[in-house]
Amino acid sequence: MSLKTWIKTLTLAVAVAGAATSANAQQFFRIGTGGTAGTYYPIGGMIANNVSQPGKLIATAAASNGSVANINGIKGGSFEAGFTQSDVAYWAHNGTGTFEGKPKIEDLRLIATLYPESIHLVARKGAGIKSVADLRGKRVSMDEPGSGTLVDVRMILGAYGMTDKDIKAEYLKPNQAGEKIKDGGLDAFFFVGGAPAGAIAELASSGAGIEIVPLVGPEIDKLRGEQQFFTTDLIPANTYQGVGEVPTISVNAQLVTSAKLPDEVIYEVVKGMYSEPTQKALAAGHTKGKLITKENAVKGAGIPFHPGAEKYYKENGLLK
Image 1 (cartoon, rainbow, N blue to C red):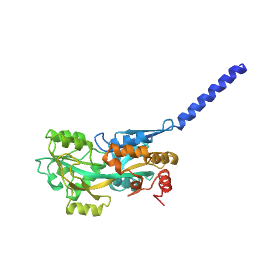
Image 2: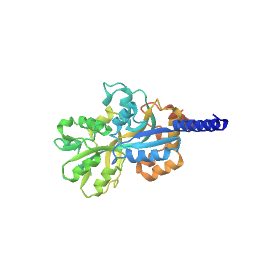
Image 3: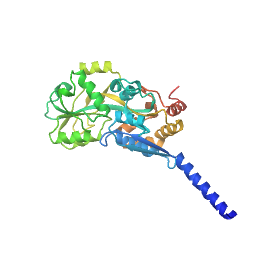
Image 4: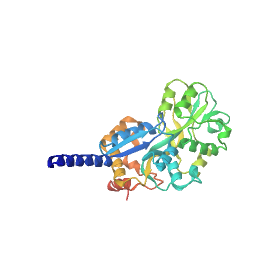
């Protein structure tokens, strides 16, 4: 081999090695969200778009069945992060609640608390549903298996001495449930998510005729005493067309990950989430986006923070 050829070969090898190193440095960051008609999916998309850094971090938001499915996805390696309700994250980490009898997911770590998620009980007008007690014998969707909504609905029904068997239970995404309400094939459905939720807003504006049932009374008060992640909440009047103010309860939405993710990756994700461009995009893109602030991020943790997130919050004086 001539010197000239050898130099060309060496140069090509260095270039290929450099490209491989660059490709290896690129981090894919898949975020499990929820159904496309809920709140997790659009907000997850905005976060993914804004924290991505070409050639360094490629974040994508994937539709999923919600909280439980996202946590299982993180555990199984199909997601790097996911949206979840704070109660579900706590149960998963501690092996309690819906994770009772299963191995604790001790590697689950918090990136940020995002915003409160209102529990919606949407009823067809004329169905005679004024409280949870009126659901007995009615056709009710409790959301999909793997969703945090289903977990909470079972607790709410339990507070009224009911189970799935006391209603004509269906397990549908909120947009599918909305279609059945319009067609008269369903009396009510539950959804846990930041208001306004797309599927409910669309249903309310379609003229189908709906009510959002208040979640109040001694049964709800007792449930809140037993499960302190439930807090009182209020869905403001006109959040949904033609619907007045509705008192209800809520849990927090959180973004979680695995302790196995490198500290520098999570640090960059958190830094990106609270950058000025991302904050503007979130505030303009969804009502709940305005609540995704670094100050709210450290509230109601429930599980340990990922060290990369903790580093950012400490640098900004939000954690000691």
